[in-house]
Image 1: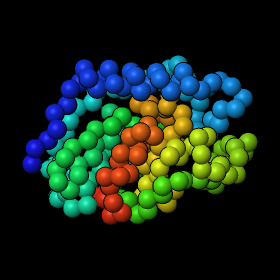
Image 2: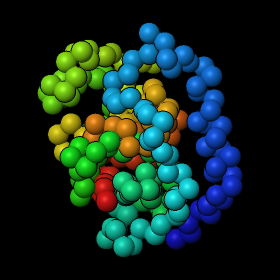
Image 3: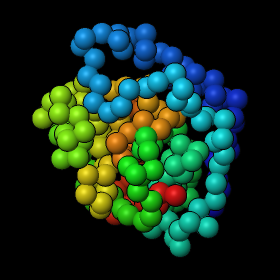
Image 4: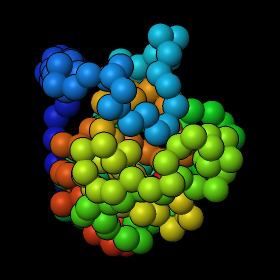
Length: 196
């Protein structure tokens, strides 16, 4: 099956536009910013330069229901549709190894308008966080969320575009809202997921 070509220069130019544009539209340092995950420090580096296309064969036996591979070290989410069409997205990954889960899971629920509640361990670490955030522009799960078979783990969008390409989450995999909407529309309940 044909694999879509990957033009690194076009991707980097597009990423620069995606990374820069949303910051112009929001005051990320204002009191109205809902910072639910971790603060981004200047020492936290993006990892866009390590993006490369991959073949699905070493990771999956088939593309039934599609396949998502999340590479924690390169901070990239690879998606193969059941037809073999290939998509590559920059993502945020867990901040630390103790928050990181690796292995096989699958999409068990697709949420078109996610709301958010902190997990018990998040609330313990950050008691000042709200108990609930309704769907909308300040929601930490962005515009779409896909629940995995592991409790509390999701692939979701984010309202804070500074996190993409970084170690910045409490365990979930984050995408730009535009990208999670694309992935959400292409994936199904039962899509296989592998985090490495």
